[in-house]
Amino acid sequence: MNIEELFDAVRPVTHGNAKPLQFRRVPCETLDIDGTPVHGDCIECVSHKPNGRGYAQLRVGGKNLRLHRFVWEQVNGPIPDGHEIDHRCRNRACVNLKHLQLLTEKEHELKTAIERQLFEEHEDREAAMVFMHLNPEVARKAVAKLFNAGVSTVGKWKREWKARRAFRESLSERVSQ
Image 1 (cartoon, helix red, strand yellow):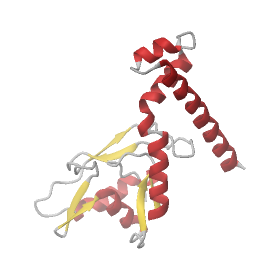
Image 2 (tube, helix red, strand yellow):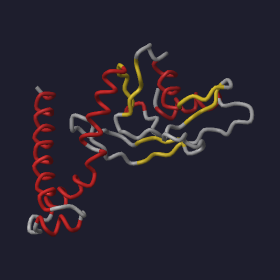
Image 3 (cartoon, helix red, strand yellow):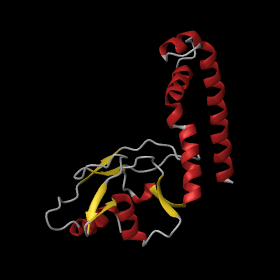
Image 4 (cartoon, one colour):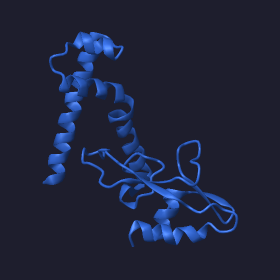
């Protein structure tokens, strides 16, 4: 069953006064935790407003359901106790089955902690390092001023960035073996 067929199957569930489900494709340029690209576009519901945490919701049988969980269960059956659905793309509004995976609560907690360390908390640092990589002639002092940081902090960011790149490369090598 392709994604369009799945959504055609899901649409009739929202009967009565509910708005019909509408989706859009959003380019996904995200790396998975092991450094490999997450393939395919994110698919987001545009007909229903996401909740305060960014998850698309659907009302079925008088209950609010997170749409990504609902879609997963329509294809794969019930989510086992102690398991959660993870967004590999880190887009909570995405319902693309290729971007969703079943993890234990412990695995999901660990993956989320690692992602926060690698991606979310270091967006400025990552931007600064990419800038330095693309503009090697620019001095650290100028980068520090541009990103509102100290020169020694930029040096620390660069060391961390190199370490993360080495870690990602070693993970990719282990996965490919």
